[in-house]
Structure formats: structure tokens, C-alpha cells
Image (cartoon, rainbow, N blue to C red; front, side):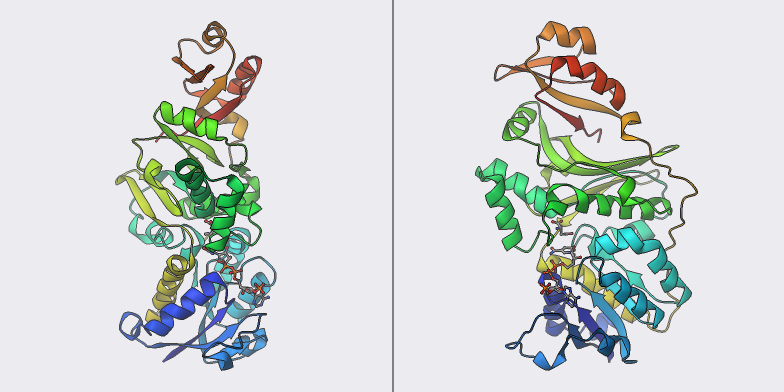
Length: 397
Ligand code: NDP
Ligand code: HSE
């Protein structure tokens, strides 16, 4: 019997509890798993196992029987101090907390390595989708060239509800919150910060060098209108919130709404589903797709990490190392190169004069066009005289 603890009994933590109570994974983990403590600040007087709840972190920290701890509290405080203390006390930690991994990953991974422990975070990106493990092992023969993904379930859910059901932004957000998809502060979802932490984690894993999410250009979905979505659709594109990174000399990386061609598999990910395209030099494109948020989807990834950790109870643990870069290696967004979708009231002649022989469409009394590939700073100065109604980057996948 291997004893574990859960910290945070909210959407995700309660999902981990339910899954492990339904099956102790004795076969998969080669040892039955038992939940000895649940830490939460709230009371659960009607819970069938109310005796395992504690409000005192030290109960878990000081109990030698606890082999692995599931951190599903969220936020940095006190999750960072707790995780560090647990690792230093020789306990494996599994987390869904992307904010913590993106902020303190290098230090926590180093402590885990030094103590031959697991610090596992499959649930931190893409909810239940296996993407961390593939990047750490299955894709290792490849040099990753590019990653582009729909990394936030809440915003994809909101966009889908607005487009398919004609729901208002506010109602769609409320529904995402009621379904347990959104962050405690949902501005992290809609302003793109959550997707930013996730693309930072993926980029750090893909190239082995820590990418600080604070350096990543980030835009959310709040400026996207139904007119943008409908016009883009007439040209054969969907509008998605995309986390993008591409490694050349410098790392081109950002989070922003992007036009995605209907023929691109990312375009088919709707609702709470996430999808992540990884471009490897040998494999070519592979896509990882599934439910990106929600109680059981996320808990399924966390329980798999617990099983992984218990399964290798006496073995040397595989570790992840994120080297700190010597200097900021991120390409400024103004230097990035894209095609851009533009809606404007300006005349066709003025557009052609500035952007050359682009194809200009007449849609609902507006001129709509997509530029050739151009550096962002050049695009910005060229498009200004056209007083664009909107301008959105176009994904090249
Ligand atoms: P919830 O808010 O539903 O659950 C967090 C729980 O932890 C709450 O019960 C909270 O209590 C409790 N808690 C907070 N602080 C403490 C503390 N100091 N000591 C003990 N308990 C504490 O969040 P989620 O389950 O949705 O998310 C948890 C983590 O998983 C976050 O990092 C989130 O980003 C991540 N995640 C969430 C997904 C989802 O679909 N929901 C998907 C993937 C990752 P109280 O409510 O009283 O504060
Ligand atoms: N709020 C996050 C989302 C949870 O909507 O994607 C999953 O990380």
C-alpha cells in the first residue's frame, strides 16, 4: 500500500479523489494507492471520509508514510512553499498548477532531481491531454521546430458558444465557470495569461531551456468580435486563441487570437477541447487533442502521474532539467513575421498601393484582405493609414 495526500479539494482535487476511490490502481502502479489525507481550508462535514481531511499542512509534511502529494490548490501562495518543503522532505509531488510550474519550475525540478524524486505536471497543460510526457520522451528523437496550440479550454468554450449558439460573452464565461473550467480569476483565461504559462512550459520542455512566461507577448480574446469571426469564416478560417512558438536563432513565441485555416486540424477543436500541433524534424506534424479542462479530464492526467511515480517507487527517477538561459532569447514581437488578416473601410486602390497585389474581398461593405508574410513592425506602419477595423495574425500551419 502506497499512501498519498491531496492538497486542495476543489474541481480537480475532488476528481483525483473520486478516481482513486473507484480504483486503487494496484495493477497499474504495482502497488495499491491509498489516500491518507486531504488538505483544504474548507470544511466537508458530509464527506464519507471526513476523518481524512486536515487543515494543517504539517500533518502531511511530517508523515513519513506519505510517498506522493497531489497539489491541486492553485496559485503561488502557499503552493510554492508547500511544494518546496515537500520535495525537500523527500516526497514526490504531482501538480496541475501551471502558474507554479511556469514560475518556479527550474528550482522545483532541480530539488526533485537532487532528491531522486518526481515533480510531475502532465495536467498543467492541455488538461487531460498527454503532451508533457510525449515532449519528454516519445518525441525525443526529434528536434522540435514549432508548436502551435489551443491551450485554454475556457476561451475556446466561450468562442464556440458565441459562434455556434449566439450566446453572449458574459453568459458563455459564466457557463465555463459553472462547468469548473475557468481559473479562480477568469481574467487569466480571457486575457491569455493561462495560455501564456502553458506555452512557456511547452517551449521550456521542447528546447530544454527555461522560458520565462513574463517575457512572452500575450493577447486574449476580449477584442475579438462576432464580425471578425464571421468575416474570417467567409474566407475559410476560424479564429482561435493560439499559443505559438518556433525556434530559429531566437524563439518566436506569443499568445494571441489567430486565424486558423478550416483545413488545419486545430480548427476542429471546439468547446472545452484543446489541440496542440507539434512539428518535429523526423515525425513531421503530430496533433494532441482532447478535453483541456474539467474535473475528470484533468484528474485523469494527475492520477496517471501518481501511478507513474508509485510504479517507480524504488527506481532512479527520470528527471527534467530546465537550464536558465544566459540571455533573453525571445524574438521581440515587432520582429516576428506573419501574414495578417485586415478589415477596413479603406478603398481597394489604397490597399493595393500599400500591400501590393493582395486579394481584396468585399464583405458587408468592408474591404477584407490577408497580407503576404511581413515583419510585424512593417505591417503596423503600413496598415495604419488604412484605419483597420481589426487586424489579426494568421497561423501558417
Ligand atoms: P478550485 O478552486 O476548484 O480548487 C482549489 C481548492 O484548494 C479549493 O477547495 C480551495 O479552497 C483549496 N485551497 C486553496 N488554498 C488552499 C490552502 N492554502 N490550503 C488548503 N486548501 C486550499 O481549483 P481547481 O480545482 O479548478 O484548480 C486547481 C489547480 O488546477 C489550479 O492550479 C488550476 O489552474 C489547475 N487546473 C485546473 C483545471 C480545471 O479544469 N479546473 C484544469 C487544469 C489545471 P477555497 O475554495 O476555499 O479557496
Ligand atoms: N482554466 C484553464 C482552462 C484550466 O480553461 O484551460 C485548464 O488548465
